[in-house]
Amino acid sequence: MEKIHKQRLFEIAVAIIISGLVITTSVVWFTDLKKSARDERRESDIKQIQKELLSYFSENKEYPKTKELYNAVSLLPKDPADAEYSYENTGVDSYILGTCLEVPRSTEMQSYSRADAENYEITGASNSCTCASINAYCINQDL
Image (cartoon, rainbow, N blue to C red):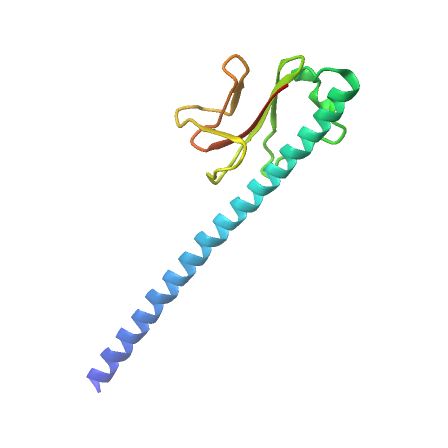
């Protein structure tokens, strides 16, 4: 009788361990899936802003100044995690537009990463785009 009791306890313990592993794996997978979905939205938003900037350029023969972006783009999309998309005018016919990604990926866009930065920044002088500990998704438009 005692042998059967120990065997059942062992079976229950194994079932609990397996259930815990399945739940943990599911939570990690779901979290990564949500991050990827937010990143896809960011990339789509950046491309939409780029189209609006091109329209602005064709009408005004220059890109908007850095502080005029909100006036130039009719409906500036909002980042899914409530961050802001960054824009810097680097000349009459050039700009850098970017956002931070949560999941590193390689795309046709320029990607930079820098682990020692505190905040997201765009630096026009060096034409770079960096994020703290994560990848940046940037468009460096230079006609």
